[in-house]
Image (cartoon, rainbow, N blue to C red; front, side, top):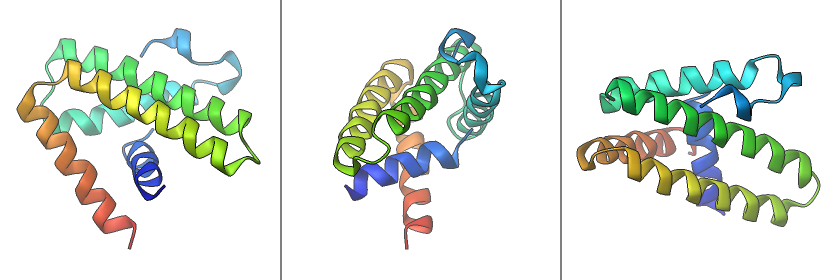
Amino acid sequence: MKNVFACLAVALFVSAGTVSYAAPSDGGKLTTRASEMTRRMAERTRLSEGQYVKVRQLNLRLLTEMSEARKQFGSDVAGLDRAVADVQMRYEWDLASILWPKQMAAYDDMKQNFTAVNLR
């Protein structure tokens, strides 16, 4: 459970795809957060332009799915934990297919440093 919250914290830390994932009612907030999240990741992992576009789409999907999970499992903590873990697992898997090994190591380092600093 701690790992799930750590992953969620990383997503929110880096926070803030394509617009097709964003709901019209979100006012572009998810799109803005996905762009900010991607920009911060790009600073640490040195993404190429093609990778940047793919990671931005992936980040928008992550944020959209997290938002949907919170709406669906608002009062069911165990269900929310399972849903968030599933979303995070798919995100990490898809991210690993986009990033090169050194970039993935930089992402893992960024994630662990954030977790170590902010979960204490």
